[in-house]
Length: 243
Ligand SMILES: [Zn+2]
Image (cartoon, rainbow, N blue to C red; front, side, top):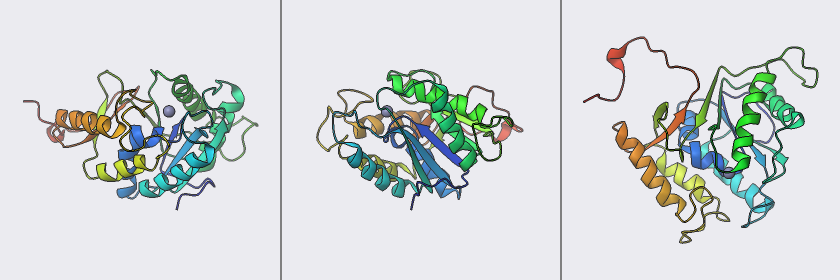
């Protein structure tokens, strides 16, 4: 069961709203769990400004989704919904969670976003990864820690993504995790989708993940971007056919 007390993690996803992680990297989170890694989620807001549902609904839904994804930790920093500030106190709070959970991999929102909270979550998350590693920062308790790798969820962006992850085995559980957010994505209400207004979220995920999958020769895939380059040892074993 996902605890709200920080515990040592291999991977931590950070996002603005309680359903962001499920939708943008839920397949990867489930896959990491399947591979034996310890995973967690840090939601920055409680969803009090959402048109649909309230904080309690969203908390219950997030707990149920965490179970399906196999998360060991799910924290919430209760930053103001639709008004996350890009300021030092916010950076420090996230950095403290990073020190307390010590993930090797951090998963953040991509650096271009439509929703201001998503962009601020990206900026705060990146800064916090840096700050958490500073030895002399006395605003933080615990040992310095900097994640080795940061990747960015880049679905919903019409760009050349850095890499794809096969989520064919995880797709059904990802759908169930997103379905936990009944207050946001009630069945049959095509317009309930803050990510792609006017589209049913499940149809949207089905189409995009199938399209991404087809581009790399699997049934369903999620997409990610990185800022650095990819180094490989042996091109002969690279997946995905060229012709
Ligand atoms: Zn969001």
